[in-house]
Length: 257
Image (cartoon, rainbow, N blue to C red; front, side):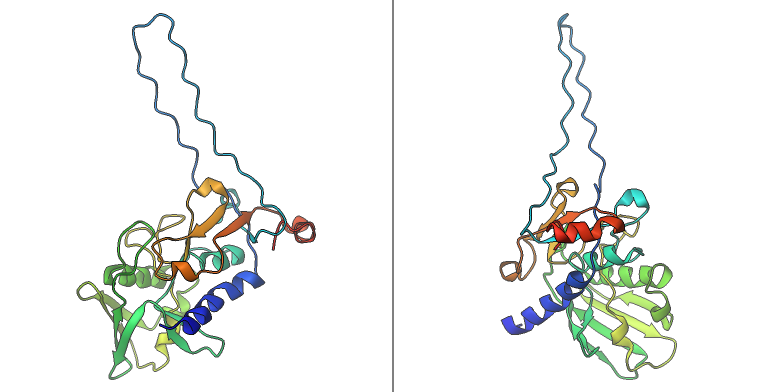
């Protein structure tokens, strides 16, 4: 894939982020320190609890995005999320088999090749050696699992109703059967891909260019396992939590890009 095509893909990913914003919150609770073992010393001093990480607010000039907090009932899971801002933000953490360009043409992203003879049975070959955020490599099982989950819940269910079955064949081959012929079916496969068995996670592992290095750090950073790591336009994307009533002030003082 040449650099020009890659820049187009990155622009497609970043464009909705620049148009829509979302808020953030601490994703995981602070870990409880392990209890100090009881010793026989009479003057034992109590161990001080760990201090939570210091969150430094972004300063004007840094690239910042709005994030909707968990305590308002929202999630970053790209399949089950309903909040508009978090859905846009999740496009930086997750990729799909295909992505739609500005002409609604399906552009392969995690798919190396695909074919169909009757527009009912579709076979997809997944790109090899694609790193996931948890250190594993993307497999056909992950893709099939994600599509099955998206059929059952979340905002993608209506466009996937024509699927009758999704199966993985080997490490990198996925076969999808439809109920009836549909020549435009691949346009429906802009489904975020997550790790098998993680549908209940609020931030499941994906293959996208950015990742939460520490949920309490209020920022996204470049994913070092990403295949185009060195070409990403931003090293860090800062996250800001705010209410709708404060949005104008946040824009004016530079706290949100």
